[in-house]
Image 1 (cartoon, one colour):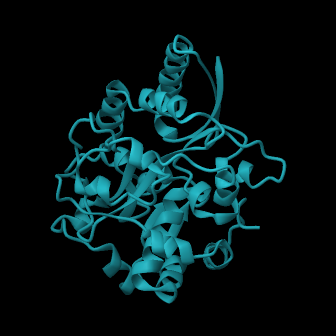
Image 2 (spheres, one colour; image 1 turned 30 degrees about the vertical axis):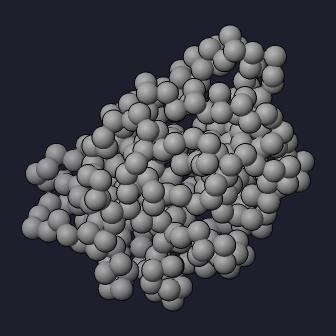
Length: 314
């Protein structure tokens, strides 16, 4: 029996059903000689995964599934994961042949799993005649957009995307004018209650737009994507890692994420995404930009503009 430790920090709003799937997967894998232990992080748990992995005494897993992107983007964490070597999953396993998925590629060792598009949610009385608003234009105008969450990858990915496309000065000015909520659902609620006219929210919340008083639409310059990735350390055999990952990408699970979360599944057997066609635009920080952006410079801007201390900023 091969023992495998999986760390999981994925889609918090769908986590209850994720736990059901994970329990079934663990049971099925036992029949294949794999004892999979799952430790979950994120909302409802004591730590975000990146927060825990920054601890000097943190125990490293064999496999990571994470939408907490600091795990992969903060080199202080990623270097530790890669010390024993990482399996080249992107060379071993196929992904959906769609432009939106190809844009998520970062390295051969990170396999795209899902992507959460961030879309506009608006008060129709103020934005009723427009479905072609560009995020970058709002940045340059200093529009007071609302988005969240300040301690997770949704807000951080928005800031990094803006930083790359518009420069640090525009990102700093934009952030100073924005309302960044603790969690993304609070940005959604602020438009519902009339506190804000326009918010950038995960697509799962935009499904609740009524199309009359409130509407949701895709940013004209592309939806910022918050992806989750899978990586597997060479502490376990490649064939065992692929067996676990194939179970995580089973059609039933992929269909659930697309149909119930309005997410983009990267599995080749997943259904067509609800929100977008193959030509739909997604945007996220480029691998080259992320390689040059140090944690220190990012968190200096982030903290100064938002007045927040984050666990991975030290």
